[in-house]
Image (tube, rainbow, N blue to C red; front, top):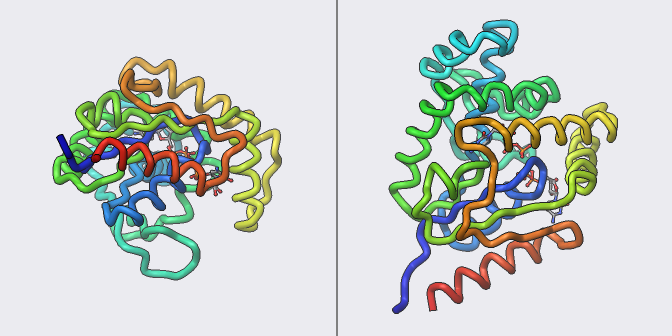
Length: 229
Ligand code: CDP
Ligand code: CDP
């Protein structure tokens, strides 16, 4: 029987190409693109700025429940896909800095932080016509999603992609530092107790080491079209 694939979940490790693929897929389908990593990054930035660190679980959880994080259509044409606003501050690029990369997995492992974030993400997912990206979308946030993809690549390829992206943006970074930071983040994300990074049983695994951005999107679109036929 024909069906419409209205909820699409995309998960995978850091810098595997999830956001890039999801953004294109959402544009092609006319769906909302929602990158949940942005929310964990914004809480991390708020903790670094206002608490001076992320070590106090109680303080970070309290902060996560009180900050207002908004993701809006882009107001500036500087390569951004959206504006990220933390209370009234535009933090679109600040949430991508290396100090946020280093601390975000500690923050996202706090169960109280996940509770606040998951609640908001489900509210958006329930409306449908959405491509949602993260670590636990197909397993926890939207377990009933009609299409699930797990976008993967080796740590070396992922580090190279993130390195190229940061150098192009003018950041001063070293490849080895990025590789180590990605491996550390994978380790924390996949071993935490609540909603660890893992592939949903019914997800399509796409290994992208030798694939272009376009090929990844084509695989997803083909799967969705076949499912709808
Ligand atoms: O873009 P990148 O893969 O580097 O990271 P991201 O998707 O922006 O996510 C940043 C961090 O947020 C991840 O390393 C996870 O610790 C956390 N995260 C999560 O726990 N659950 C999600 N649904 C999304 C992100
Ligand atoms: O969202 P996630 O952290 O998984 O990755 P991303 O931000 O979408 O992609 C990381 C970088 O890899 C971006 O600069 C992409 O343009 C690039 N990329 C690539 O070079 N080849 C692919 N097949 C996918 C992504």
